[in-house]
Length: 286
Image (cartoon, rainbow, N blue to C red; front, side, top):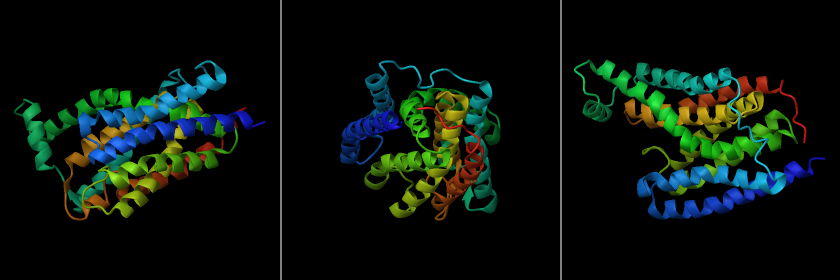
């Protein structure tokens, strides 16, 4: 009964990792994600999406059924605010405890060069952050959607046809981690000052945790767009707002960003919440 979903999953993963190898090789050879202005990273992020579309066309001869409709607004709203909430908590504790400072003078110099106002530093930070929170998240959908069309548009719904929400989240989360590992281990996708083993462990815990939110939003809403918005919102708030805002000490890299203990703990909390919510989701029909 489950042979078709399993065949689709195997086909999708095979195409994804074969195509990804091309981008891994180029990025690792360069030693940085910023090579060619980051265009290789953009290409890599679109590999799952292209692979999902190819797989869907092979098996279904149509792209229907991948969650193209926007779905209810409340799921998009939830997707947007989840990363903002866990960033405010994790980075707020970091700043208040002295594990990291705020603001980072390097970012303030950048903000002063682009925000032409005589307002206070706090107001300038808010203007800068608000701009990214709107326009940064919207533009981030261009790359986030590339991954989510594949991972959540095809992969997770097919997994949900053959197993429980919890097992589907664990399997998809581990594969999602594995897909990122070459960039962490052999390129510069981690914070300076953090040992690779620590970065991998914390990143794994974080991804397994937040992955449950991605998957729940996809299956509950019937749309891939809440997951794409969550992906973009996470990337912008973590990588472009809160981490750059933080003045780091020797201990700070072990707490913040995708490779620190703070977001790993946030991921555990999210996993508890969304695994519980996921138990109420019906098994998809294959």
